[in-house]
Length: 393
Image (cartoon, rainbow, N blue to C red; front, side, top):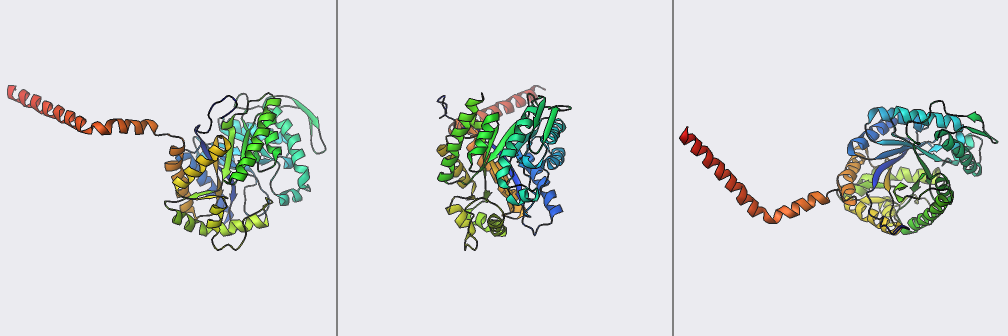
């Protein structure tokens, strides 16, 4: 329960995608980018709520360099889904240009754009900019202070070691009022929770599904709540989202067979490029089994996903959304089917979307014989009226 005593563990969940994306280097990049756009279009048709698009510049797997450019293209192909930078790596960009770009996208998408910020995930990116990873979070904080103020319509003057603003003010401003949705991504460090809490932004957590990771994120949520309170914001659990590795099929056996397509390549990337500690070991006889047993991913059936996410709700006390990592663990057809299963079976069960429909069924099924007799009586009476009218005519 939250501090007010309200049970938040079974609020309706939003569903979306966290799109780095992960594409092994065997895939043609032009085709991969087109397929990413098709994936967002599919999510829109399936009723997913949002997609967050990442920024990366090295490593060969995560190939979107400009999430704002991708969002502009995706917005033209979709109708309802909200589109966010997930995330814009602030240390690599002048904050005024970031704010102007996001405000323009806000108008072009009629308020469907969201601004997600981060320090940049890959040390190999930072190296090309002549930056050390220890410089990234301080730069992100400096930039974010200015960007949030600019998006709110304020005039900003600030000089740092790497940018300067002189009475800077957006030329047009945002479409969304008072401003667009803001989010900060976090993995394990409390810095992300502190940054999000400072601005009352959403908190996007990149996580495994094991209890130890979840309890760590609960600790960071407490930091978020405390930071929100210090800065006059309300910590709303509906704005706390978990990005997870999920692949589903009609059976556990099929799901594990599906991910034989690309899981090993992703494990190689996790070992060779991604700086997160404790990547899955190489050369496993059963990589999918290891991922499930060590609770790094949900690979199984819709019922497996429902059970695991319900457990996550209980451990954390409730949160607002699930974001599925975009990756090529399975081939294109199986990947699409996995998303369809989330829409068809996982989301309605978790959100109890069919309670009224089920209640209607259960209310009427026991009296079916009575209803059948009533319907038959109505038919017989109609036939009698017709016969009588024919005789009179």
